[in-house]
Length: 258
Ligand SMILES: C[S@@+](CC[C@H](N)C(=O)[O-])C[C@H]1O[C@@H](n2cnc3c(N)ncnc32)[C@H](O)[C@@H]1O
Image (cartoon, rainbow, N blue to C red; front, side):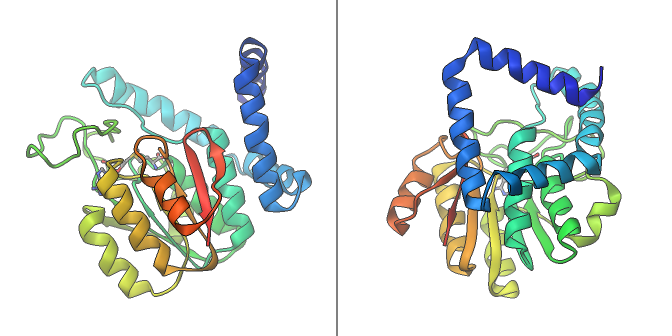
C-alpha cells in the first residue's frame, strides 16, 4: 500500500472515531481555502506538494531520525509541525510569493522544508532561519534552553535542517544562535520582510519578543505565523492588540495578516 493511501485511510478512521475533531479540521481547512481564494487553489497547492515527492522524502528521513534520536531513549523528539500544517504553510507562502521570509526554530527542518519548497516553486524569494539546535548526546550549560521546551533534538553531529532535500537549500540562510540575540540584527539588515514564523522557544517572553520584533518589519499584507499558539497567552494577546483575527492552520498553529 502506498504511503499516500495509508495516510488517507488513517485519516478516514480517525475522523469516524472523533467527529468533533473532524469538524474542527474541516473548519480549519475552509478558513485556509478562504484565505487562498478557494478550494480549487488549495487543492492545486496540495497537488504540487504531492507531486514534489517531499512527503515521501520526509517520511524516510523521519524514520532515520527515529533510529538516531528517539530510540536513544534520551527523551528527544522530532518536534516538527505535521504534514497537513506543512502543506498549509506551503500554500500560504505560494500565495504571498515572499521575497524575504524569516523564521525561528528549525530543528530537523520539517517546516523549513515546506517553506523552501514553496520558494522553489515560486521561483523567487529567500528564507532566513534562526535556530539554537539541541544535538542529541551533547551536554549544554544549564539554562541554555527554556525549561518548558519540547526537547526537539537533531542527530549527533548533524546541522539544523539536515533532513531538507539539498536542492531546496539554494534559497536558504541558516543563522545559529538564540533568536533573542540574532533576530534584531537580522531584521535590521533585511529591512521589510513578507513573512515571519515563530517556532523556537515557546516561553511567553520569547514569543512576545519575537512577535513584537517581527510584526513591525512585515510589509502591509505580510503574515506572522506561529506554531504552539496555545502554549502561552502571547499569541492571543498579540492578535487582540493588533486587532487581527487569527487564521488557523491547525489547533495549535495560526497566522495573522498585517
Ligand atoms: C519546535 S522545534 C522547531 C521545529 C521545526 N519548525 C519543524 O517543524 O521541524 C524548536 C527549535 O528551536 C530551537 N530553539 C530553542 N530555543 C531557541 C531560541 N531561544 N532561539 C532559537 N532557537 C531556539 C530548538 O532547539 C529547536 O531546534
